[in-house]
Image (cartoon, rainbow, N blue to C red; front, side):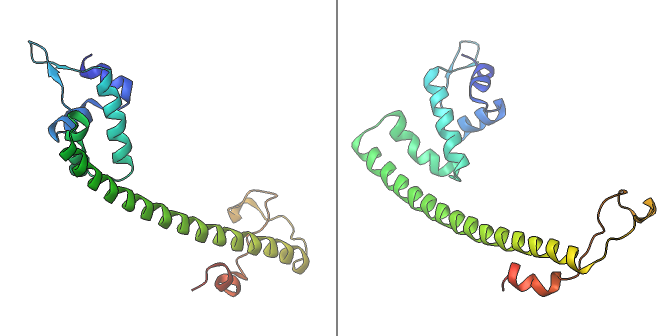
Length: 161
């Protein structure tokens, strides 16, 4: 298959595929007229490259794995294993950091939902019903007035530190 078909099958742009070749991540055969030729193994290789790139691996790091993928032997396998172990540790650390960020975000979401629920309860008990304002106020007729009081007092609860 030619580069256009490989691009269509993998979702990688032609420019990306040429970059992968330039970086030594992908090797194509050439036709007598000089056109790149690929096969189904290239489709799998591009998918793997895209997965590694999406995980934050550099093209230089991926290039360290290519010799083992292309022509495996014991020395290449040992070298690739060291690279893969290092990348696995990096990915595990990134996953742990993302999980901690998600947990902190979940806490903030909960605190803000509590604040909004409290604010909704306060606004109905403290304020008498307001007559509708003319449209020049910038809000739609029938929409509730915007209240910002009380945000300062609960900021420390919703946004600790």
